Every structure is written in C-alpha cells, then in structure tokens.
Length: 265
Image 1 (cartoon, rainbow, N blue to C red):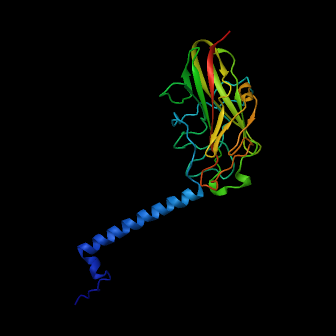
Image 2 (image 1 turned 45 degrees about the horizontal axis):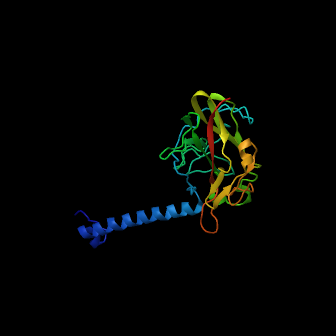
Image 3 (image 1 turned 45 degrees about the vertical axis):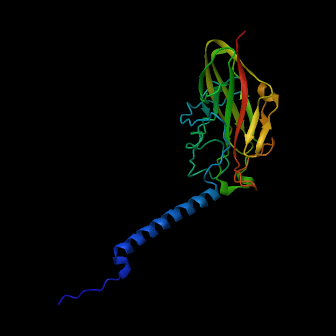
C-alpha cells in the first residue's frame, strides 16, 4: 500500500479564501518593508533635499573637460576630470558636484547655466543673445558626502566662488570656479552666441546665495572676479551635509545673479 504523507499546510490555507488572505498579507508586508527601507535611507541621507530655482531642468551632458582656468583664460567646458557618484551611492568624503543622476539638475558637473530674463525661459548651457538682453545665471553647488557622515570631516570648509570673466567676442564662454580648503576645485561654464561682438556686465545687487536655510546677498565685488565666501547658513565658507535641527537638508545651494549683454566697444 502506498503511504500518504499528511499535508503540513493548514486546512484554512487550502481554501480559496485562505489563499486570498495569504496573498494580501504578503503584499502588505512587502509594501511595508519597502516604505520602511525608504524611510531609513531618507534618514541616512542618501536622498537629496536640494533647494530649487525656477526654470531648472535636468542636463546630462557636462561638455568637454577643460584645463584649469585663470580669471581671464576660460574657454568653456568643465573640470577637472574626477571620480563620480550617484544618488544611491554618494561620496564617502567631502567633494563638490560629482553626482551624475541628480533628479533635479541631472549631471552636477554641469552646474553653470544661463537663461534670458523672460517669463517661461529655462536654464541651459548655450544661449543666443543680442545686445540689451538681460540674463540670469544659476550655479548649483552640492557637497556629495553622504548625509550619514555629517560632521566636521564631511563638511566643506572655506568654500568660495569666483567668476571667470570673458573677453569681448561673438561667442563668449561664461564660467565660474568653486574652491575650498578640503575639496578639489571645480569649474564649469556656458556659451553665449551673438552675431556681433559683445561683452557682459554684472548687475550690482543681483547676486544671491540660496540654501534651505535662507538667501544671502553676495557682495558686488563678486562681479569683478573676486573670490567670495559662501556657506550654508551664512557667508562663512562652511558647507555641511545632513539635516539641521528643523529637518531641512544641507549641502546643496544655488548662487544666482544677473548680467546684461552689451555691444563691444
């Protein structure tokens, strides 16, 4: 006689309604586990909480790598060539603008963007202009150290920004260099294209450094190419990661300012 081994599955689970309950319970556990994981990751800071600027779009191509410029020798592109990271795997140390899949701006190496001062325009890295145009420039800055490393060693110290000023030409490379005491200097720019030779003039009183903690007016000396201290809560060069006491993200910011296009003399 063939011996039959009794089923170990409970009788209620062998009914149609029992199986339905089991499936529903399993789905609930999976969803709950996913939500809990997201909350843990969010707490650890693997997800960005950047301040945003109107007209920002994701750009994925940072352009060609260029040599380190001086104030008057910038020819476009970005630099230096450096290790890159992602939102899912941020840097294990303080580093500037090296994440390539930021959901708000795209590739952070392409951090310098320009648009016309007109409703409905968006920031890009190339723009056709004519004398008289007023422009907004936006620079996105990020400390890519993971938020769970928050502390002095993951904070960028002595953070400064200075403009790279172009000579008069029909095609002008605007740009900026960002430097710090404990992070590699970075640079990036955008191109202006004109049918006639032009130059650009900084509009006094327009420069603001914006973080989740506030807006800070930058001195008009910035418009002459002078390196200016910026920072998370004041213009002191300190740029930490993590969250503040009110749960607001740190380590991301925009520096914005205005220019006017003029015909070259």
